[in-house]
Length: 241
Image (cartoon, rainbow, N blue to C red; front, side):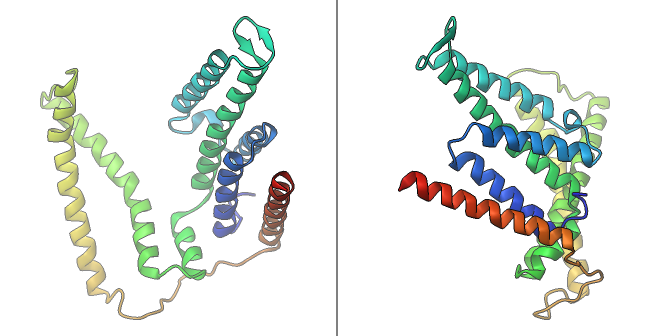
């Protein structure tokens, strides 16, 4: 379901949710956003805890929750040093963090980079920038795999990555980052020669192999987004008025 939505619609929803959970001082909004993200991930066939780095973000969220719950002394005491205001602030802060992380993961998982670049170019993004965007998105996994290979190869050759302190970071910079930098420069040079040979950038407009069609589902999602934005603006006007 989420995979079939127009990339621009999904990007607009991601930006709106990110802004809304931080702008509006609401406890329910971050919780609803987290619940919606988890549900959409399940529908998309992705278990939330299998997202790379999710355990680290979960531990960070628990730390934020405990910090607010134990440090804030205002409000009614629930038990010991725990107050209702501290617990509310902790849940809100943790919800904001997890909402942004989960919504971003949902967007990345369900959006193909080339489709995103084409959709942005259709709405006015210069195609040179779109090419840079899709190239960066597609080369990131390649460099990650290459970093893994370089790391394993250097372990076999006796590089002491098990060192501690500043020496470890120096080893990483010297033995890991330098080969990756050389590889990145070589890849960029080869790519620039290839695109120059194809006269990339010669014409002000470009052609597309595939066409992105706006479906009824995209229109419904866009209408819901517009209604949500208007409701948020109306609520802000009422609160400030």
